[in-house]
Image (tube, rainbow, N blue to C red):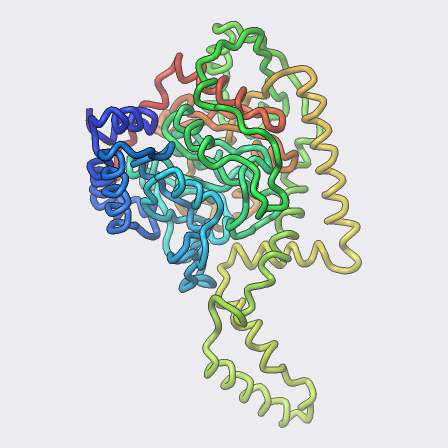
Length: 511
């Protein structure tokens, strides 16, 4: 077998047995990136020299018999939204094009502490706002299964690099489906942990009450491995939960007697592609054949999820992105252009006898900086959020959305009294063509129909590959669990992968 064909857990065993060296593994992935990333554009930065140095250092320590970490010698790609000391953290935005982080995000530091090799940083929708990775200021990412199609978003680069065998492990973030949706569209595993299970310190915030960091991998076992490394309480994150972290890897093979799966009625209605419906139904039958009890459950307020999410998330984004004003760091508009425009404006106002209406230089700098630094989708969401929070509209929009969020959370609590996990599709359709939905934001938003409520409720969910469309595009199966039940979620997902082979299919890289 080629090095690239091994899963991360298999690589770990090979490295521990000294059948492979870390340098050999890292070199194999770097060569794959050089050969194919020009077409896929999954990476915004490849850490070649430092990655090889880290690998050599791990090999040296292993050879001397020293203790090495859980991820020793295994390459990990990191989404461009997670701070990495000494490297640019751009969030795929012109606004942060030249920003170099002075510190590591907690999850990045944990990977380093466990001797994982930081392979590079992956492309994304700007500030994690998007579902196709077409909103990056530095170019769109393509789906490795067919480069005419999107890889999903906002963690499209993190998904594509795993699907294209350019990294065995990657870190994504999920605010409304941004791990699970691209994982589903790229035919890999994507785990969105419970809110608070993984530290958000060093994650550039989009919507602080929704954002969560999680693994994107080839297999469920690989996700268990990476979650083991990054999970846990962090005193630097006030939203981090002080909850014990189980041994995810060792529990994967434990038998699951009496498993109760709930099929969400609202996820099988109008708008669901028939090929997706069939693939998910076939997966449900796999579980039934393994002894699981299948029953229908209802999440009655699920239909309001998109509306609530696209008020709450933009409102939080409006607040979080207010800091990008061109003063302390990040992009600043050209001052010569600012003064030229102010001079021209002043001349017009003097001629009209209205000099007192002149814009102040500071306000002009703010407006021009933010207008030039942010892309169209980010500006759309900032304006939407600012409007929802404004006087006279707060109660009608933002406050009402929060009340709906509480009802959605209650629906999940009631459902989990009847079943252990929820099962259904990740997305209404397989991947769509690049450019197909860029002119129709609402259509793009509706692609998150089955994922946003997970974030609104703060529960855990995983996407696993479960089939292909007639066009050869992957289809994803979603499982959702109660809060802090990732252990059971991983076991149930792994059970499926022991009975199927969708996860071992490899993407054709030719366009």
